[in-house]
Image (tube, rainbow, N blue to C red):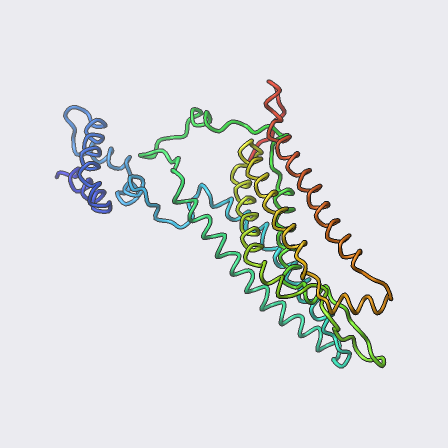
Length: 341
């Protein structure tokens, strides 16, 4: 019984039509090369068994993976989830608790407050967790389909030659998990504070010993809302850079330039926002001037200038460290290296 033609057919029928003829010829030739000059049915069975399941072999010929996230990225995918989800849960809890504290009227029992915090935290955490898992999965799925698979065809065994394109990373250039976690926390906290600025930065008054009432917000909500699309783009860029760092695992000159561009854009956006004449709510300024009995125009200018200078200093340090780490390891022939998972 001729088993070769059915085997070739079972492989090629699972491929796009434009690939079928070429793959059929290639596979037929490969099988013939693996057989002796006068093969028996036993020899044919042995070769086909070595090639494996036609469906699996077809996937290796196809450029489209049949899985959402393959084994090469699955461990990194799980590690990212383990890193991101706890941070998001902490941010959600802090946000809900802060909102409950600021809205506390003194008329609600402690049990009701605790129950309210638990319910709101559960729903908010579930929503944030689902969205985080969704977007991280989308990013990894895109990476899975945009990178070339390194899997050896026909089940060939691993050899040391595959290490030639995977050199060990110098320890001084290595990007640690703490660095990635710090970037995620900074981005998450920044977005949380920005979206809750009207509640976190406000003037509260207490009349006749009653609960605190918000008299005025420090920042003009319309101005913050107008800058939100740009802040969101910048936050997305920050997350993209963090994920890029995760795959790269080390500082390079290219990464340092990307980091520089991000910091420059951040400084420009902050400068535009902080210098906006209507950023501070006039009602809040009036409230403070009345309470302190002094002109605060100089104080607001000092706050603007201090914020920009602080951002420039910290961004400059971050840019310098990026290039400094990227250059480390190039100056020495012998470097201390650390095994990368």
